[in-house]
Image (cartoon, rainbow, N blue to C red):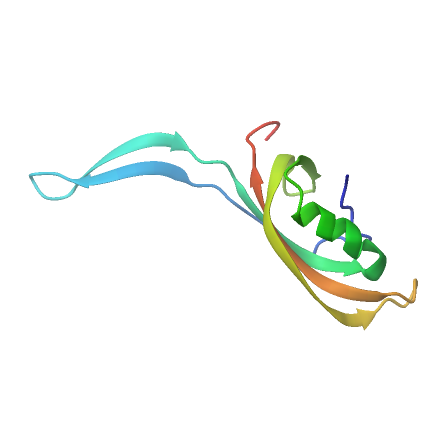
Length: 112
């Protein structure tokens, strides 16, 4: 199964955090213990054609992992959620309606 929209995504946002344990200490301030890094969270948004809606919906309901290949991130991911809205217009070349979509992904840490 794959989801590869005709249009390039309008926005790809990658965030990465560290897992820090923060506790007050007796002298004021904090003791901070680094428990390691968290996997990246990736937010992708853009437009998709009506013919791509079923593939997008299948991706939202899948528990499989996917390979995400973009200019901003490459690696294995799982779908955390997403939404679509529309139709918001009509493509001049294909004459299909298009929709806006938003997709939240979590890196598995593999191939990142």
